[in-house]
Image (cartoon, rainbow, N blue to C red):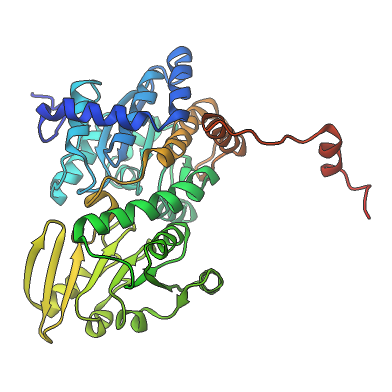
Length: 421
């Protein structure tokens, strides 16, 4: 029987991928510190790991740290359009890491690649969207007894995993890397903000200044997108279902309104909610002619593409990553990147400097799982504060920034109740 050790587009792209991986590593000083320690201490020695992640230059550097620590690692893609084929080739050709990922792979191939990662019989999983964990629980229950734990990178995945935990369906512990302060405050806000706008601009080359730009969802990702759109001179609207977040958006200087109202006046609408059909048929029916739609949430369910297709009598692709739908009314609606993550499908994803912290969380949480197997239950955990604090400290150190420390007197005051006014 032939054993397939990888499935990538073209191994000849490996040298190009290596150059880009090294370029990204220059902007990842925390991982530079960790790779030295992991190479010396081997905290993951002999551990089988499978990662279902976006195959990007930043992920490649995460993989380098894990392997340097002794991990036996296999990777597959967490989105059909997010793979950088030259990076996949470099991981296979230069780092000898099995990778199953091809940009543009169809749905069947996508799940075949997940199956290949599960065939590795992992003891720790790293997920971005919870597909690896979900498939294991549905199709490969024989693997559950081997599991020490897993980590989850994104909001959508954490939502899925917490739903599993509530139903007592989760059979091993997960650490919600997404919820670390050094992840969501920076990766979700500054990374998503910059990379989403990058994807929109690359795919359309349309000036944002003066345009009406609607952001659906005002979580950390939505905050970042709104902030960067305003920085480009756009008039920003926020739609929300959470009254506290809607109020916050208004206090931050944005307009808040229902999506049905926003659709009629928007030049751009970007979804970042993690929910289904945030843009639906009623919105298409009133949408401004020429409106550009994009999604920055993990899955391509936020925009009801099937409903859009049912309203259209003509579809064409005037530019790469742009599908233009001509409706019966004569209006046009333009969808970017097939409704998938626009920042990864049409651009390069988050800048390396913010992924440095996110992936440092992944690395240190994998080490934490190895050292905590006897006390972790089958539930979703937050990242330990000491890991969060250490990553922030390392990042500040790399940036040559010093901060104050508490004096003994101040520590005593903060931990006591006797002193008052």
